[in-house]
Amino acid sequence: MIKKLLKWIAAGLAISVATLLFFYLNRSDPWSIIPGKQLSGEEVTGPIDDWSFVLQYRTVTNEVRPSDPYSVNTGYIFHDGVVYVMSGGGGESRWAQFLLQDPNMRIRVGDKLYRVRATRVEDPELVSEFHRIRNARNPDPEDRTPEDLAREARAWFFRIDSR
Image (tube, rainbow, N blue to C red; front, side):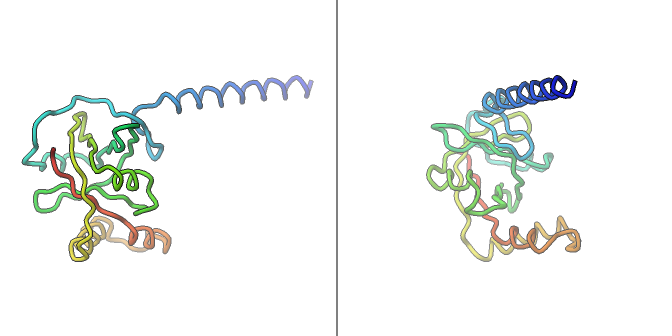
């Protein structure tokens, strides 16, 4: 009886793993913190001069490495009319490393895709301003662990320009 039950459990686990593997390998859009591949959505052609519409959304989705698309959901900062995306892991983020190799990417805001170029922000004053903006959004430091604060300090920011 126990042997039969264990066989059924093993079969159920094998089917579950195979199903999850199938969905993982055939994904397109990222799901939560799991990266995706090529994004779906309507591509907008032409340059974007006014990015203020991004403020309607909590996050954006970045698709980097055009030769083999890799996509992630990220936070952003809208500052002085410009959109900046944030890599919370700094240089440890895989997608940030891909951007250093090729700055061309697509960004999805809502259900629309925009062809953009990303440039890493290295101006210390601007980076400090971004940290102040982020801290204003999360004013209660008691909710953040020392590890969270250390990770936040490593964050990289990329300026997004239409191409």
